[in-house]
Amino acid sequence: MIGPDATLKQAKDWLRSQIRVGARCPCCTQYTKVYRRRIYSKMATLLIKLYRMKTQVYYTTDELVKMSGDINFRGGDFCKLSHWELIETRPNHNDETKKQSGLWRITEKGREFAGGKISVKSHVIIYDNRILGFDGKNVFIKDCFGKHFNYTELMNN
Image (cartoon, rainbow, N blue to C red; front, side, top):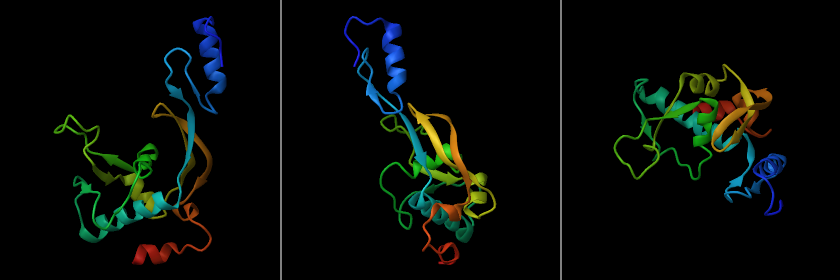
């Protein structure tokens, strides 16, 4: 930690040196950290379920699907798919108490990824909910699962 008599420049330099492991800012006490998030099997499974809903039910590309019923998720990892531009949320104009509308749709890029046509970087680098960049190797959706996973079975069920 840095001492109470440090200059702002010294505090900034110290915080930058800690940003990968995470630390509290000595000036404002906000916790700061750069996160490296991987696209993994649960996220890919939920994307495929959304892809299949759109395919089987023939929603228009402008129609949004409220995430409930057949698609069940907890936590914010599903929403992180938006960092890869695989899903997008409808802006929230109706409820000022909520950050987002809760309505999501798969993007064209998401459809191509779920369909196995394109690859994306395996990791996104995030700081303060802003994308700093991408890292890792290019992966296809099948690569997001373990060795005992059957992509064809999930797509056909």
